[in-house]
Image (cartoon, rainbow, N blue to C red; front, side, top):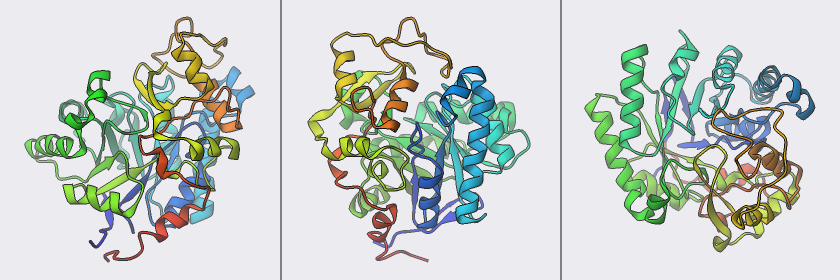
Length: 352
């Protein structure tokens, strides 16, 4: 199979790949720039970028300041060719401010999930930036399309379809996750395509979930998707922004280490069974204070752990207290290597 180029709006990449925006500080400017350099859509994860101490007194301003610095750094590394985007979770308390900062900084597209981004066009104003919702089925996409058309006269530039075997936060019930075969990427494709046809919306559909090789990519393209979003396979890239001790946790993990727990975001989240997760599964509650209030849906008095604190521990390499989000295909992660090595494996048979 010849791999097609991926075109979203006026932006195009050599390979049909979007690098997932993995927070906190995994999907940073270094990883996004490397993705763009090697022929993919690069993405900065907007959450958790700010200086830890400065964020305690002005979380919104500090988050925006460092986000703009990260965007500028990518442009310095790869120029203005792009395509560069930002991933902004709907669940963030500073959602609107982050979207506006990304637009002002000149990114090419915004990816938004962890909730339905029904108000996203409101925060981008008249900008023609590409808006890409993350959904987990046809019903969710229909809600988004109807809201955007009725209130803002806008349509998505593309849609990312996350399957039930993705890593991180999941838009499925625990029952659906237990029967993942009933919500496969092939089934979701048919659902989402039907909605797009209903609203005469001709946009790329991007699949997310268990893509770690050229063979996986070809399998998804054969279903009918225009491209893929890849997260887990890129977690241990040299350019990914976490400590090598944390990268080694991913490398050493087995499929049996992957579990789903409830996140402070309010959604199921797929993670590795590390010491923090084992304590949570045993009914424990971590001691923490909350100086940020980074999530609208989080009640610090009730949740068992602070997700910001846990992901910052992952960034530092604090294995005892870190939270390690992953897809089901964790065993595809074998060694720390430059991101370019993955894209070299796609070189043969690229069209255009």
